[in-house]
Length: 332
Ligand code: COA
Image (cartoon, rainbow, N blue to C red; front, side, top):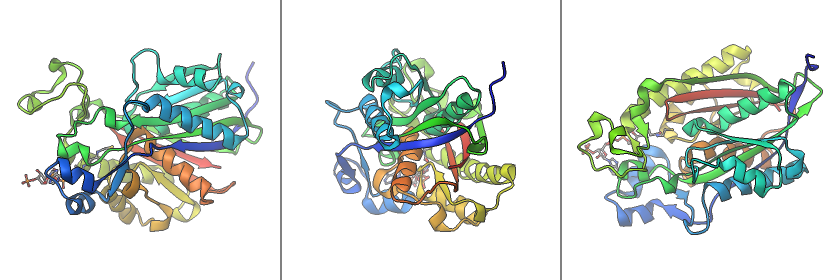
């Protein structure tokens, strides 16, 4: 039997960052870099990193979802699915989402992880929204989380200056109004560019061009210039596609909540499309690039500060390793 059409309500959001701050000045002490260089090239002043003894992807994700459930006035057992976007899961098995499901007492809710690097939160919220609309699920916990500090080589100044740790979460529930929820979404990938951003587990996975460079297996490798080129173009195209696909103008959209990769990448797209600065807020100065954590973290901070109200249109956009890119336009 075909289920009746439904919409999706964003019932709550939450986020979590570690207390430990790693500032540019801290990095100056361990690397050949400077606060001035980092701020000019990226807009980043500090980032949060986990205490490896007590924190990680699981604890950040768990705490963000717990906060989102509290915000929604719900408990874990109200959920029938948990989807977690991450590329820094502690173990290949079990998934981070299975452990989080048990920790928030959502058992026997289904749980799975989505590996889409910095697109983790946007991919996950799109999948979750679609599953609710299909009629198969009623209440879904969505998490985007990465403990990037667990895969960063702090001797490599090209990556260590960029990344931080964070988690963002949302609770989505079925709604009787089909006009509510995600009104447009796109998810794309181009695996031919994977060598620009990768985490090798074995020597044989290291591409030819990187063989002569010092490699620490299990740590992130990045060709910054290539990623920059990809991001500037894809980011602008993804926002333009979301506007064209919905028939909305920049004026109709209250907020563009974008992956915090580099302030220059965000500013380039914003200026080219003609989006006012206040509609595309940034928090990269304080949290760096937290990969799958970034969009959910910023979204929660904006919601909690009253910047995103019921009935408004919000456009989430991300791009990252894979290479991947995605959008999700919501009538909140
Ligand atoms: N501190 C000081 N100097 C640094 C440095 C650092 N942390 N990192 C690199 N440099 C040096 C380089 O060695 C190079 O020196 P040279 O000219 O003597 O060879 C110079 O600065 C320029 O390096 P380059 O890599 O061309 O810098 P850039 O302007 O491209 O900035 C990034 C580097 C990483 C900030 C930039 O490429 C970037 O942000 N890329 C996108 C990364 C991203 O968003 N990743 C996540 C995607 S989701």
